[in-house]
Length: 116
Image (cartoon, rainbow, N blue to C red; front, side):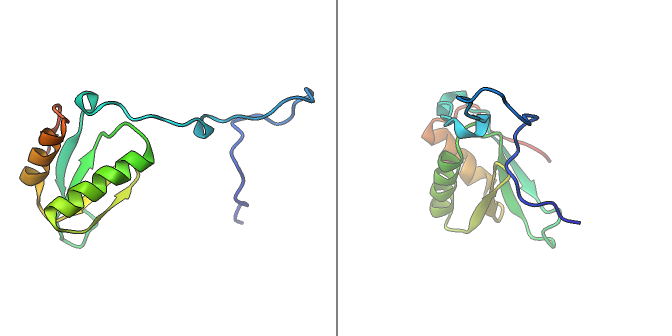
């Protein structure tokens, strides 16, 4: 049986305070760390993609909007498609060297290629 889509209240069931307002951590806006403090890793991934290669960028700490903006920048510079899922940027094809150079030029100085 499927549960109804409800907002997670993190264990709060009831409050006797009439002025109580619930505030979750998700409601607060999260600012992105400066590019110089980001530790990004660039992987080449083929698993569960029917043998097609993708460049996977992980380790971004910041808001979803900033992640999507960075993804759009990388996709346009590489001239390929891609997406953002689970806090990771997926770029179609093996563009690790080009992505590494683009990120270093943009100020992400702790960016490295990872994996084999």
